[in-house]
Length: 437
Image (tube, rainbow, N blue to C red):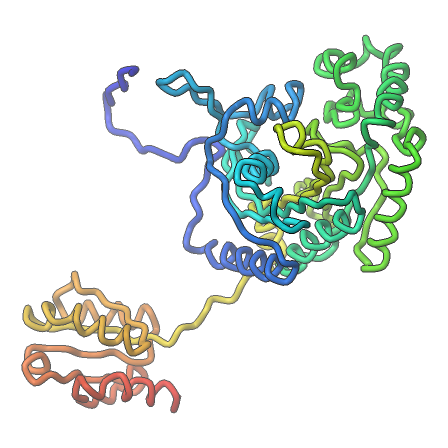
């Protein structure tokens, strides 16, 4: 094991670049996101699951593709003492498909609808909406039929999740990239188109052209953008089955009025996609230019389970970036109102009262009364200042006398009126006061 370098002088330790703290001020937004997620998966009959944060590197190389940006540049990898090569999960679908095979879910009644919510990791350039540790909510459907109905249901579940956060102006950009039958002809057409332009392409595009030409349509380098405009489109090279599948999917989307836009150059960056691919994009709004990123996306992956050793299984999935969604909520002031719990503040006076305070707090908890306290502070004045800070309607004053007599003083923080109440009647007395406010 490498020796940990000694610290020569004291300095502030900050979070790792690209990682972030979820602070108390943001937690109501996270709770809103988890609530919306639970409502969607319950209504659309998804079952929640979780995969390990660490998976075999081979899982992602085999499914995402050796030439994908994720595998080439972005994975956090770990070599164990035993020599195993592991990766911190960069995305969710591959791990869910691995679990689907490993745990015999193929023997369950289909479709099998699975959902997840958790952290993922990519060594990306940190910027707005793009962190190295980020969270995703995902929806996956494994079916026995290659039916566009499931594409539509997956997209609908993801879209309803966004709607549940009150985010408006989102459009699904959608394309089809064909299947094993028609995609080879499209790849040949792309190579034929880009080959004369090869010297003008960026280094990544030149390297990918002979092995994965469709990735050129996903290139973000500005000098490569003009070439995409005249590139062949997948729609001109689809087989009859893929054309029918895509047409029926669009009909489903129109029936449920899910806003979509055709994007003939959308391919997504992972090798396992087939037929349908889509991304959820915020419609352009003045002042939100820095939010011009996909809130999420997904597509169909009919060959993924087979690639991992399972039997051929049609499947489709979607994932949404939680930090990206919350960034939009904050920018648009879609803040969640703070929950106003009815609480009391417990003030203790003296050692005996302090010793009995914990049991008193537990009695209030069992009675359904929320309590705040400052048991570490000794003076009554300091505790009263804290009670004022929390703006509680009532304070409970528990001193030496009250501890002996098993009673508590209820103080109205607005009027200053006080009343001594036996411990056995305390919960009922507090609830009565809350009701009469």
